[in-house]
Image 1 (cartoon, rainbow, N blue to C red):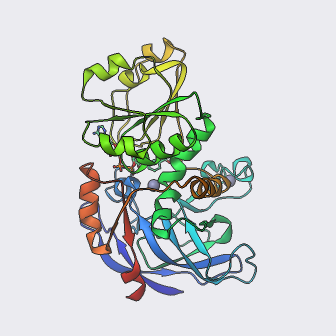
Image 2 (cartoon, rainbow, N blue to C red; image 1 turned 180 degrees about the vertical axis):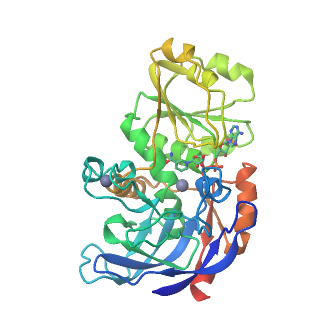
Length: 350
Ligand code: NAP
Ligand code: ZN
Ligand code: ZN
């Protein structure tokens, strides 16, 4: 086992603090890598604040992880020392159920996916995430970061990127499709960039117009404030696909009314509390309400390669680890343009 420096939450209310955690020795199929950058996802905040149930403290969050391989196990064939790699939201799954076999590990029905943090690994030990200096992960759950994407920009692709890429592909976003993205945060801004790169017509639905200039620069064709009731009149029945990335509850009836007949609203944001769904706007338009969770390993690799090919990368603000708690406050205040990424160099030296 090795000891690494990390930032951990020890309760729902205390700030994250510097600590150490252990990483297992590299097994035959494992890859050890130095973490260079770790993104801050709103899910990290939901988890440490116990909004999704009581976590197992200490929690070392971070599931948008990018770095460089330092050691590989004897049977590892896919990676070698020096490779640029990443890890997203899970580090294992049963590998035997139909979903795992189909590359949809995020929907594993065997053991369920093993989260990158706040879970228990195959070895019975708790998993600790990317706010740390290094990590050991089975090679089957490691992604290759293409040349041309910086490690800092690559990190948020491992969760925010794939979470938007997967539903855009599943619901065939492309030329002729009208797509709306609700919420221009970490997930939302990736949705705008990816939908635009796929050739869809993209509209941002944000609380206000204060980020409008950014939204249009990122690739949006239109931008509306949801605080303005006129938005819901003007856009009624307009969209084929709406991706909701908001971390809080919304008035679902209003947004369902923006879908065309047979349109789909996909829930990506996962707020703490259940949301009420009025049925009239759903039935009166044969509309669908769905959800989607990250993406499997093959699709995550496909997304990374797509981003490299199309020059798609997140807009990031790189921070030092001692800024994590302030960054959390800013995410909660929707004051992020558009993803905080922790430079973990100081955690590797410690
Ligand atoms: P984020 O950066 O905080 O973005 C969320 C955006 O939602 C904000 O920027 C804001 O956009 C809007 N928003 C926030 N509070 C709102 C409110 N009360 N009413 C209306 N709009 C509000 O968060 P994120 O990292 O993108 O994550 C978003 C959600 O997705 C979280 O719940 C997270 O846990 C979840 N998530 C799900 C998956 C999945 O696989 N399904 C993966 C990752 C994350 P505007 O300022 O533009 O209004
Ligand atoms: Zn995430
Ligand atoms: Zn499985």
